[in-house]
Length: 308
Length: 305
Image (cartoon, rainbow over all chains, first blue to last red; front, top):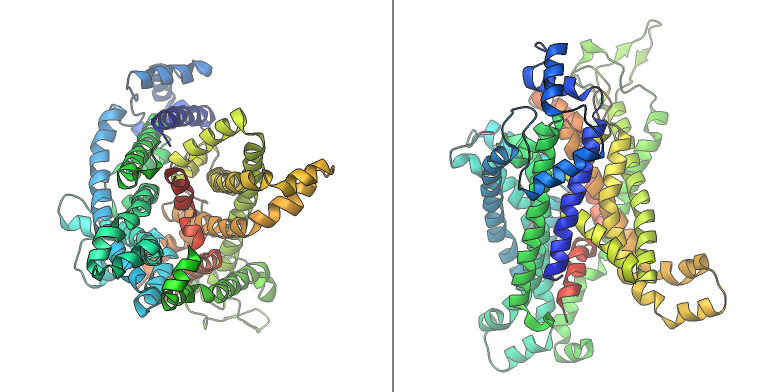
């Protein structure tokens, strides 16, 4: 996909998130003002005056297609609005949470790269061997374990039973280990299989055999001819894995109490904080498009044959 | 290329092919696991009748041996898997949860496959603006993480099976669309379809005899994979309390409810965990390893010359 179509995709993502958020605002069950006031002041302090002040402050009376246009105008000015619950700017809140999420996602991606591709490459070099077979079994089992389940097992075993690591929290380096490991194991299961398939395909090619014939050692063949061919599908897939990572982050952050964007999203959905939901969704969607664009560019560096 | 390679190193090609030979076996095992769980969901309540919501608080967290005695003095063995923390039969909750998850996932996959395949073939057949517009919508949806979309739909529609069903279909149709468009384009341009059209056969005939036989294996794989993804999403949402509201039995909700009692009644927590795991394993075995890389392969198509 080229740059203009990625930009078009970006525009569509913005419109889609905007449209969905507008529908959300319109369809909040019950009186939106009462719900938002309840989210702000708690159910005990909720009365008609509070609801009325919220209604006046947020201009909830002036509903209709105009809201959608206002919102689009805000987006053009890089404004994401104000959280209905905390009253803070959505952008400020998201910027803070995004940093936490990105550091967690980065740690997870790093760990998964250390585990998955090396194992996959080893298995692919001897396709059909014992390592290949056991890797297939382990990957199938890991793929069939939802990430929240893996989180549960890790918490019960490592935190509760052995008491080695904290089950939840944020701030210390050891808080990273369990959530990052949970995300990494799921990612590694897929990248290992992909690396294995790509490596097995490379060992079957004529150029690989030729490289061996002209006297290159196994290691030389791999570094000079194998790695680049394996890297292309892996890099493309890493981009797609970002989706898995974001989905994982939504659930994993909630379980481990990690103050990131996924945790914030679930909370915003509970309290029907629409600007927060739409801001978070927008950041996640735009982030995904940007990552895909970077993956495309990197893919072209690795295999320039496709460039016209 | 293949012939050359076979000539060069026959033993290595054999070694690579070997794992593919046990594919059918993997699929059979997967299908057997899924079929038995579907049977459990369908017939579980007929074999041992019971109510998943009925409470016997004095039997809370007790095992299957906690038999009750009715007024008439008969022994009631109504909970073969024991009771949860609120004294409800785990077996009947499991059967109900399995039925609910399976029906939402199956419904979502069927709707997604139907709309994805029709739109994909429309795009492949029409080309031009229709294809560009549909692809743009599909690509943009792909850019939003699936769970996020389901979560957003669940704000618009209150947390009901309907919201999950619609949200999941909205996510799943893209995969079918892309697959149908890719396979449809080459088949629609084939001489067979051209001849069929010239002979006056209708669109349905062409789909049934030319398109579907080509698409069926890929689509079946995508359906099994989509089911697995949908089930995983339903359970994950239940686990973070956003999915089906309590007290309706749901696998993710059951796990999070039983989690505090894992030391007293590990078996109670293990049952929904095991069922979810088996269901996903069965579906993934059925879908084979090809489906896992299908999206990547699809994307690579564009990158390769």
